[in-house]
Image (cartoon, rainbow over all chains, first blue to last red; front, side, top):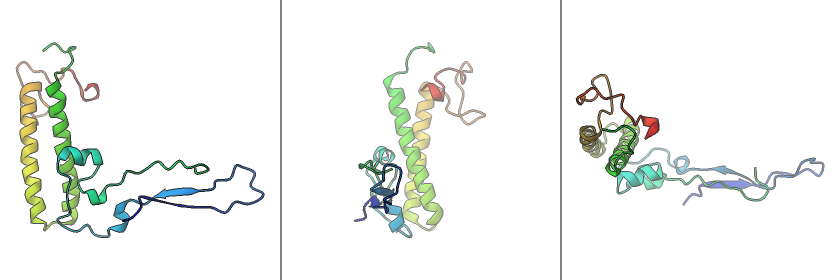
Length: 73
Length: 89
């Protein structure tokens, strides 16, 4: 199962005048890993559920977490 | 209908149902753009389109027109300018 975001650690120079950013994260929603959407994917049961999740197909759902770890920007 | 009185609960429930069904129709439309031969989904799309029309018809019967220029029937008297407007909902 693919994670919905990934992080990396940028190089921090000893001469960096500002507070260094240890970790930077970026969003990786499921549609990145699904080239062409297959037919008959499972759907949410009710239209209201689909509306609240922002998509009709659970396999394409992504909470888009707000990753605020210490030192990330 | 007194325009400043708040709307009944059924107004919001029905509007929410319409919003949900229309959202699914948007998603299905985008899906069908790339999958034109998916017969099952087209059937589902037509069922939902029919349901959306029914929901809107019953909404308009109780709370007035959703669309103008013939998009909706009018009540008597001519009342499309009556509150709540979309941003007041």
